[in-house]
Amino acid sequence: MLEEESTRFSRDNTTMRKCLQFFTLACGLIVTEASAPRAAAESVEMPSVKLRIDDYAAVATDLLARAQDGVTQLYEAIGVNTQWLKTRHLSSWPSAASFPADSGVADLTVVVLDPTMTTRIAPSPNAMGLAANAPSAQGRIVYVFYDRLRIVTRQRDVPGAAALSLVMAHEIGHLLLPYGSHTEAGVMRGHWDLEGFRHLDIGRLKFTPLQGQQIRRMLRGLRPFGPSQ
Ligand SMILES: [Zn+2]
Image (tube, rainbow, N blue to C red):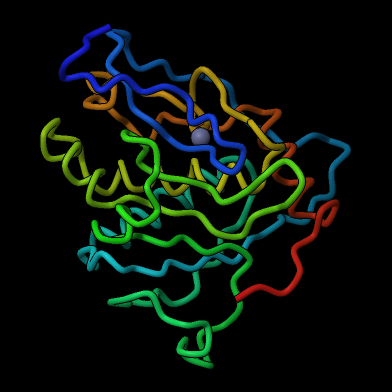
């Protein structure tokens, strides 16, 4: 392990947090090759999830769109349709009442934070994202610490859209999978070394077949979402 550049990233041990984190072990990017066909016994109807981005970080529009496409493709690969509601570009923490009335109801919201907001949340030092869930309560919101992500992607020359896709898809995955669903590889890999991240190829990342099945079952109503902001 490289200690300096390092920032050693240990698993976030708070019960409310499951984050995509980086660490500097010198291991390569491992990508599973598993395909994710739908199980024959499952319904043929494609489950869907309504997503929205609340962008407080003024992310470039085209980058955000490409990141959304990346998330869409990752979920399509496991037979899940993503419906993106109109992104809300915001500049400060609003009260719930200040959201536009016609903004629609999302199942899950991705909140892309600016540096001040990241500091306020005080995530573990090297976390890039966080899913607000717990073993006993299904969460609806994930956070992206965009300032941190942008630093890493610039330093390592990683495509920003791919990195943002991964963080969003990973954290959304936490809300659709059983609590504590990290794997050693693929989308739900929880720890990344910086060198491996430099070679990030979002097109080769996948959920495992089991994760795909769990997510589809979740979305088909075994644990349905209720109304949310
Ligand atoms: Zn995670």
